[in-house]
Image (cartoon, rainbow, N blue to C red):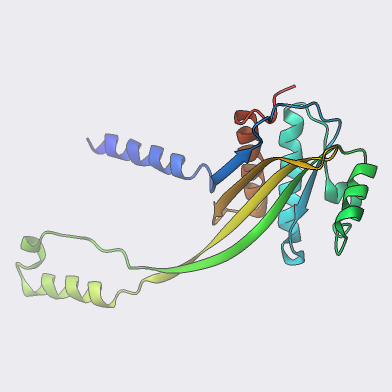
Length: 210
């Protein structure tokens, strides 16, 4: 019985620890169907202080698109990290089109928040008959419960949105919103995000394996 509980706990840990990101909503155009794009640009629209995150997000998204057979490129690799700063819509569209891209996938960090919560000290919950039996046992148990310090943990939540635009028509083809909870690193979050979104785009019949 003890072994079964231990095994179940291991599987639960593996299951809950496999991803820190989840899709909260997604949409695709009613007439959406897989299209053969010549070149897909992945563009991270993320503020300067989170630029390293943008780099990882673009990189892994590009890799996942390439795994499907699409010709994909990172905007940072193509143009540099500040190429689209303070650029008007027309200039941004012209810049993307001039690169030969006929589709663009945006990655936007909508919000980032930190939440702090208190974790009480670990306690051993014994039956009252055990620690009530003698004063020493009762005193030690209660003292530990009252005076053992807990600790605070801070979790970071990221709220993302990605849109796929057909640059020939400028129409929105697909949109998705996600949450990432306290990822291990920017790279692991980028890897999870790209894989999660690309799989959803295939499910929505927006992309296919070529």
